[in-house]
Image 1 (cartoon, one colour):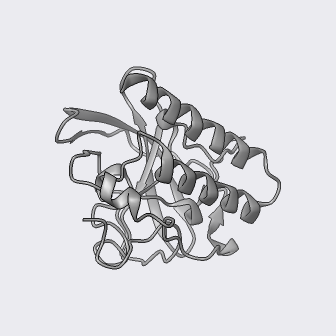
Image 2 (cartoon, one colour):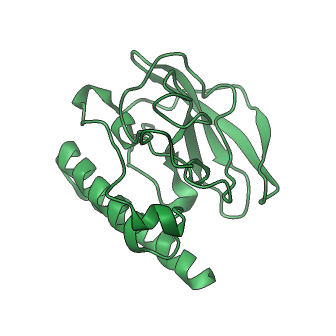
Image 3 (cartoon, rainbow, N blue to C red):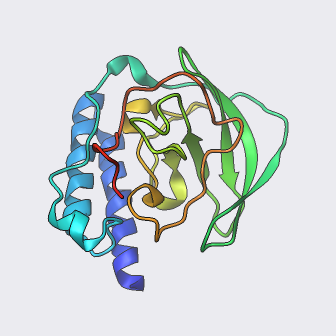
Length: 201
């Protein structure tokens, strides 16, 4: 199990490196979609169970909307620490490193995962949660896992078209940290990965 997980993470990191190197955001998004479908369909670390994988025809994703790609400044925010419990992985410690303002969506806290190696974590629970998207929210950035869309000079690329479900959306055997207060907005974000009719389980 360890080496397949290592391979999964390598592939996710390589996919996002290809996304960052693209000069066309929509083509990069299509590359991301195709890469994720390939991983979900055939990789041993796919979060789908055997039955779901056998019936898999692709992850449902909303059409690309160029107006939902942002490069916001990372604004200062008061220091805050949260410890998010998970079913299997204990507590995930988060330290707020700033916030980003997304026009038409709202302000979202940006977190540093305060564990070995660390990484930027940006989850989102929007007004579609529990209906067309997973009730616990989706992820936008998770650099520990290689999910990094880029940015420089104090800015982060935050493209809502790349919003994706955490593993626990596909099968209850997985556990994952969910969007805390500060990452929940009432605005519906009809972009990124969607739930299939009836959900995954």
